[in-house]
Amino acid sequence: MNVALLFSCITGMLLSFILLFFNKGYKTANRFLAGFFFFISLFILSQYSGLYGDSEVLAALFSSSPTPFVFLIGPFSFFYVRSIFRDNTHLSKADYLHFLLFALEFIGMLHYYLSSWEYKLSVARILLSNDWHVTQLSLNQIFVSPINSFLRPFHIIFYLVLGWSIIMKYYAKSKRPFIPFLQSQIVKHWLFSFFWVFTIFSICYCLLSVNLFMYNTRQEFQTNSGLLLLIGSLSVLLLNIFILLFPQILYGLPRINHISPATVQMSKVENTETEIPNPHHMATDSNVVSAFGIEEKLSELYSKSQPWTDKNFSIATLAIILDVPEHHLRYYFNHQLAVSFSEHRNQLRVKHVQELLREGELSHLSIEGIGALAGFSSKSTFFSVFKKETGYTPKDYLVHFHQTD
Image (cartoon, rainbow, N blue to C red; front, side, top):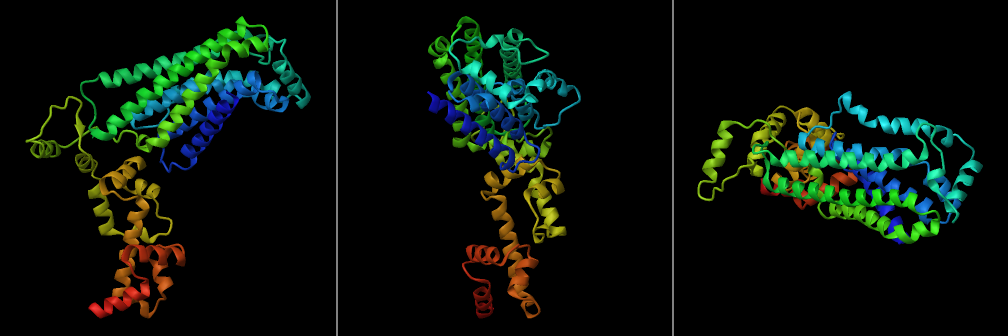
């Protein structure tokens, strides 16, 4: 069981860092999801180190210190699902009230954080001893221990119910924004799976909290609570696996609040023979792209400028220029064009190089200079990308062009 708990902790924390730093999102709901995975994994680590581990150092570091961060698990789950449906991660001033209990708990634990290492080790020894009662450890100066032990699970249950209410309310609507049908189904299945697993975790946590008061020795607690902690940990691990198997989850819902009558009419004409009543206002990917105007905006931008010639040109930059959420752009490139943004950018740069070579720019620029002029940051990248796209090296392409001219 110890191996399963540690694996769940490590996997959850790694996934949270990947979602936060490497998802390449632009103000997306994935940041809230990253926070959820990090803090719930931190909680599992605290339970393992204090209740099932045997290392005084680990217990001193992780058993008590993360307790305030349990009050972030619920708010991050709430903000995540709300951001998915709103397609907006903006937090109002009132939203910061959701972090009030965390702030109070953190302030109450400051004296423990600032205490000596020897004191933390003494607390760890109490936790690791068999003759214990953790509910009598008063480490928080604001919340007494028994209240704290019940406040945390109730806090999670509150946000669990709140999240379920948002999901049910959204899917109970007869009219919703136009969204790609396939992506909508993926996200729907994910959100229901996410909150069912979160429900299992919450139930296990509540029962564990009750067991803390029922058993007076560490051995009794371990004997009667091991299965609960294992189920809760494996449920979080299951969520990690879902994301790894279905990364499309991270696109969220590319929603359209307003769609032109012409687009709707076109959709009806295209689907005359196979039209199926669609009470939820789903849209095909092509109609979504048309309604967002991404293709038109790109065409207009490229006709007026050549942003790919900037070596720092990125999808985040493009999202700002077009005023389109970055995850919508990624959905457009990956699902509509069936290429990644980097491939799209490389294609534009290679075409630009081809034009420069055909126009005779090589007479006063080196080949490497032409690559830099097209936006390539290095000679090696330029040569490898050019050959991949054309089948020729730049010099061979020039020879081939003159032979066929």
